[in-house]
Length: 492
Image 1: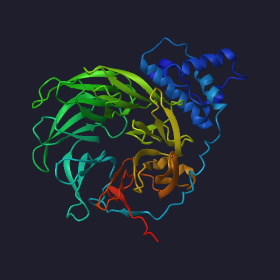
Image 2 (image 1 turned 90 degrees about the horizontal axis):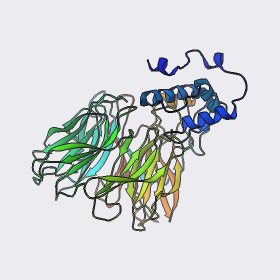
Image 3 (image 1 turned 60 degrees about the vertical axis):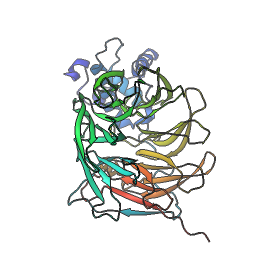
Image 4 (image 1 turned 135 degrees about the horizontal axis):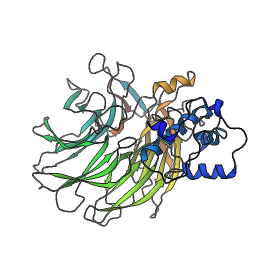
């Protein structure tokens, strides 16, 4: 129906391609149409052979939007506009294939699968303090199997323990939602493993009932795929509300506030829309401007590709300020971390853009970068390194020298890497900060880029942060994580 509605051609492009150059008027019409709701796509973002499919998809997006206010150019003219300026093959950035040299600081350890034939899809890893006075938990979400896991340590009889079984969890945070003194988990449940506009997403409360036991309660159902949920008192009334990143897909998707209209001990939530755009990945909260009201920062992907801070007026009503806007709608945003990277007393934003699961094409601009807070919007962008498929980066002092380094991991689908004629790419790296703002890249793992989650935590209490990366495997037989033990060589 959509193809018929927008008049997409069904014959091959070459059979119907008009002759002659596009006129200036045609080019202006194409630019107005293609840049109306997002940045103008760059022809270099896709190879020539891919542009017809990309243009068809763009026309479908316009049809799905329900809009009819734009002058719609011919599909074949738009495809030719981009294809004629596109490269035959997307060039890879320098260093994309060859591993960078690394000091013998980290020792990699892999683990057997939790059960025969296991195919983990770890989407989330985080150190969470769930029991005061005891060591923190390392919590993992397996997006495919639906399990929420807790790491018990190498010496435990069962290193990983299942503490919850959900649908397709993608993120978890700790809070005492009912103020009973026992710390709970709130979990974002996508509802579907593969992209979909099905309204199967959920916000789930894993309410603590014992030292290692939880009961599951649904706080919100019937929404699009939920990528993140963050607790906080956003309206200043003394109880906990929830900010929700309803990622959705092509139609569904918003940023939501679940406002607690109950009490501290008996929470009850009412849904309010904060922002109508789909594609939000992360919504970490913070009091951004120091006015005593809890704000949050949102990474909004899909065609939007922006980082925005949502400033709270104290009642749970927000206005947004643009922190960063990519100049390419296929930028591939994949994650953010709020961190004072330059140690100047304010929060910056560490970012990654390496998502390849929309187009299945490597991009020369997939990278780790940070946005410097200079006290005004937008922030100043600083490129750190290119990394095809980069999905997560975290800042941490990995060498105990007092400044922050950066670790990052990559996730590349097999159907993409198989097209690269045997080439392999860095999967885990760290960027050692050797002087203010200067970083040296080192490869920790080359090849096997199947990692979407990463955490830095001192697992063996030796005062050094180790790195844990989650496995997001396409084939069975993998353990849920790999650990890179921080073992600096002895000083001579």
